[in-house]
Image (cartoon, rainbow, N blue to C red):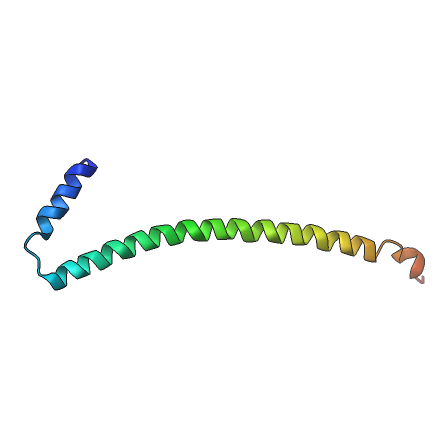
Length: 79
């Protein structure tokens, strides 16, 4: 079925519905659209968070490397 055929079928199916039922149909359509876009936003948000965490991890690693640069000399291990 093509998009046009489905759209026509939806229009035909909704012609004799009450106003209350049409509101329910509209709410459902808006719910589906919001769910789709929320999923896309969540993916973009996750990518942004992962990128930020990756940068943070690199910065943290550099900080730790600086912090422990002379660790063996400053804190010799006793045998």
